[in-house]
Image 1: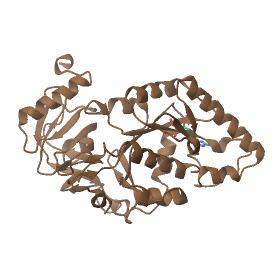
Image 2 (image 1 turned 90 degrees about the vertical axis):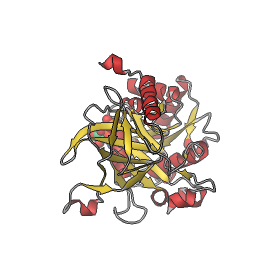
Image 3 (image 1 turned 60 degrees about the vertical axis):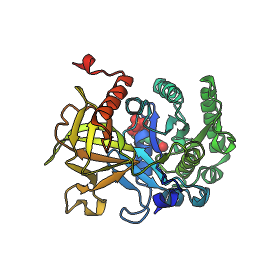
Image 4 (image 1 turned 120 degrees about the horizontal axis):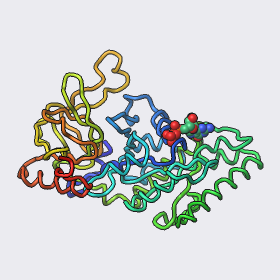
Length: 362
Ligand code: GDP
């Protein structure tokens, strides 16, 4: 088991980095996520992509399978990548964790034909402000005139299979994009030429339509995470869970429930949780923890199954009494053996940092 392999002597475990997808409307965020989600391995097999609530987990084995020769899995000890399913910088900027961004790393999707657009610039500003490492996916390379699609291949292999004319058209578009990035004070280059990702943004040519470059994109995300996020990913898995509310909604048979991305510790079905809301923080006992069933079982059974515990990083649904006033973007904390008042204060402080106070809303 990857998590156990990653555990070090102090009992800390490396969790999966949380990945967000940002970019201008129609540049291909949803298509790219769909492509990654649909890319391999039948669900239920070991190491398969698994659907979480609000997120998709791609284990290292799967990254390595998709990336083929680009990835040597023994180079990595992070367990994989967790993609937040809701793309867009609006969701990115409302989803915080302890004052920072909920996502640890991001993909900025830019249509190679359309270049920088207003929401591209907004996304860049947000990524810069939150100091979130990111990679640029230069999407829709398959629309290059004369393109000869190479389904799911690494981009350089695909590039080599193109005509001179297609190659030079794509080069031109990519250099325009790199120019746009530099106009916005980002020194950027094709990812394979970037030596130091701390100072340079890597550009990965991709097609969400054909899957070309997707192996490279996953490889770069793994590499960046390993290089820059490893320390931040060390968590005490047995510690009290901490997460962020994605959505508050009715769950048939359970009343109001919250969809949560857990980024620290563990939540169990016996826990008491503190949840930020439109009024005072809600202190309530977990009724059920729900996760999607594997696809194979969906037809015969209910969509969700109850689980005893969930460990970060993961998406899950928490059903509990009194969640009607819970709020998307608000913190969720497992009380554990801490003082109730301390945790309530912590949740209030975090809400205040989000620019939300209970008085303002009242
Ligand atoms: P979003 O608004 O950023 O989520 O963009 P979508 O994923 O909805 O994509 C917008 C449109 O671009 C859709 O019609 C997609 O089919 C199309 N599209 C997305 N990625 C690609 C690509 O790589 N190649 C081509 N040819 N079309 C794409």
